[in-house]
Length: 136
Image 1 (cartoon, helix red, strand yellow):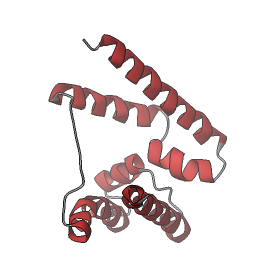
Image 2 (image 1 turned 180 degrees about the vertical axis):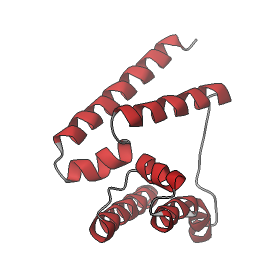
Image 3 (image 1 turned 120 degrees about the horizontal axis):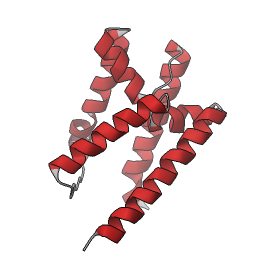
Image 4 (image 1 turned 45 degrees about the vertical axis):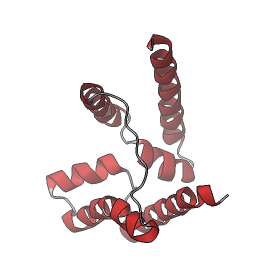
């Protein structure tokens, strides 16, 4: 059970931050929207604080545990870049990202978010299946 505690704590902190942002600022904690508003200079202090909070997570994890979080990336840089562009395109098409729709939208019983999350999951399943079939 202790192997799951970091993930549980992280999930609880994500939920807490999403609730605080919604209750205190009336904003949905969708990372694509927060980055977009930060780039435009809208509510710069709030959006910058949220992004800085995301970036200090790994160093805080290291302080708490004495080691960096385990991250393994096996894809090539071009594949990662293409994936990032497709995700960015998808967030514009879907009027939000997985964090906004999946964390806050579902909690608010948004039908649009339910469709978006189902689409995200289906696209992920299809992508992984195709990549596994194409792998040597």
